[in-house]
Length: 113
Length: 117
Image (cartoon, rainbow over all chains, first blue to last red; front, top):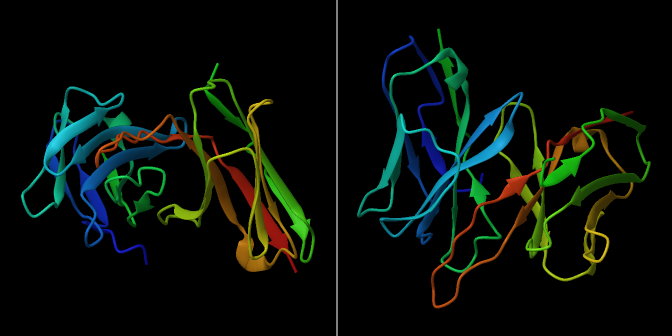
């Protein structure tokens, strides 16, 4: 158990809908990262937050957004969902200077039908 | 061309064998190199990370980095059926200073390993 928690574990929704994925980092970690894992693209970095501020951005779609709250938990919002958004979404966290040591949560499996 | 290349396998070995997993990369800006293990439908688990060229050992695992060749390896000695998983290499271009960091991990495609009894 990495100490990173994610909810829900599974999500099934229809095209066009909006969902919110939630992540709680390890105790003491200020950085939160979101990744998407699909069969064809592998694990892809989406976005990083550090202590509530956006720190780095990957190839995140405009339909996707994230935020980190004062209690350091983070939410990833996915809207206008398409079939191709079906994937595993992982959250990871690290200490302020420990970006090379990212600890991943169990993931949320999103299925868009 | 992908920044990080990893042979997806699959790789099948008998129990007790030495396993060698490899990745190559093209961007010399990568400074830290990680190996993750991912069991089916689970989150990636950090096995090891290294910074400089050379070897780093942890139990049955040895990570090797050759920055001049842009080549990294993970060796697993005395492999066990419980080592059966997907192994992902990952790299990062650097962390910031002054208590902050930015950390986009770039992953290889992963190598599927099966260790059979």
